Amino acid sequence: MRALNKKMMTLACATCLTVGMGAVACADTVDLGYGLYGSTSPTVKAVEVMRVPTDAKLRNNEQSQIISVANKAAVDAVNASLKLQVPVQVEPMKGDVLDGFSVYQLQGTDKQGHHVGQLVVVDYSKNAIDQVIGMNKTILEKVPDAKKATIKSSISKYVDSYSKEKAQQQLQGLKSNTIEGAKLAKDLKMINDKLPSQIMGAFDKMLATEKNLSPKSKEEVRSYVDFMAKQVSLDATHVAYKPVQTRYGTAVTGDLRGSLKYDGFRNTYSLIGYAVPTDKGVSLQLLMSDDSSYDYWTNELNHMYQTQSLKGGK
Image 1 (spheres, rainbow, N blue to C red):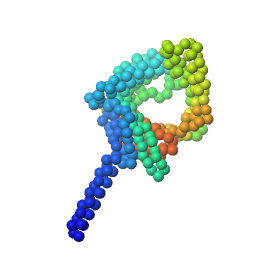
Image 2: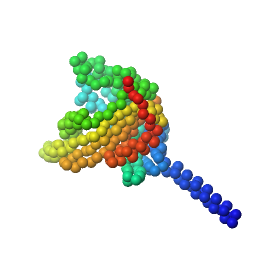
Image 3: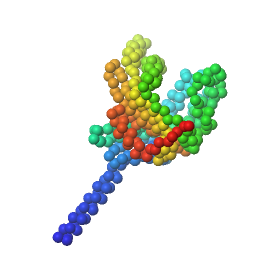
Image 4: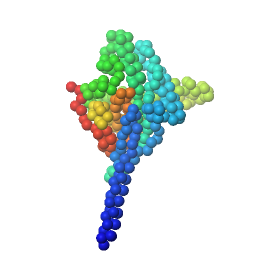
């Protein structure tokens, strides 16, 4: 009997250790860039879809090529936008905009059901942020006084270059904001009124580079896209942002809840984001899911970041 009890005790201890180790092993790690890593709760599974480390020494040849192509596309897009939207001449963007990025699929289950989210991490370089600050400074210096009042608050009014300490200081004074109801409806109407022309503007630029289509074919395709663009509209029920304290330091978090409508069909969504300053740049993390999973993923990210609210601006 004593031998049996000893065997039972050994089995019980082994079972406890196995279960305990299993619970720890179920927590997955996600790369947030710049040496930051997050751990999911044990009930959430993270699967890597794509990853380019911010540390160039950790990249393979394929990842190096991916980030090179992505940076060229980002620089070209920024410079094209500057020519169209900025009223004065500024120095074009150069160098790297992105230091790395990653995409994960997250899955978890609770009593409400099964939840799926996409976590996208984009790491913006200090080089790019400093250039944006310089551009804003140039714009404020060159635009006529009559137009300065129409320009929204410029980052160059507060800092002359990027650093983690300066960014955190600005975030600690940030006033939280929530937009709902009539104010949000008014803003959405302005966006939806412009949306078809913006879609067509982007499509026309793409179509102009297409050399394999005849003028007649281009016009037919354009007419079809124009028809579809007029059926698309955005809806939102809640937009908010606030400064927070996280395990990575001071950051800002925000969320957007709403739906994308097309010709009577409605697809709901939620977007929860964190922007975390680091010494080498800013890590932007966005979790996208169906709106029905908003509470689930909010709780999961609060767990991952150990989020605590800040009072914000005075």
